[in-house]
Length: 104
Image (tube, rainbow, N blue to C red; front, side, top):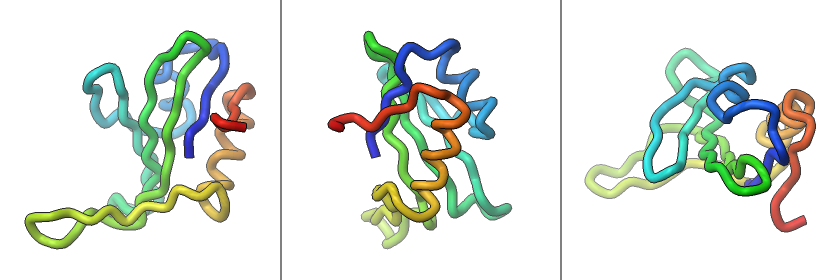
């Protein structure tokens, strides 16, 4: 799910920490954050952010479990905005205020 926080009042790091996310890494201008839902690390919400002229662009999904299958990996993520991911997007909208889906 692609979202944008329009004209945020703070940096992505501060916003997502306030929302309960942990910083994971930063690479090539993109920052990764996670919010785990269980003590084993999965399931978890995983959000990639990058700064754009109008705000902070976010790509968020729900990782159900760790990648598997030996040398090749398969991702077990959910990207539709219903169920738990839809609830999380609603929660973030309440926290950030100006959260909009890209492409709408």
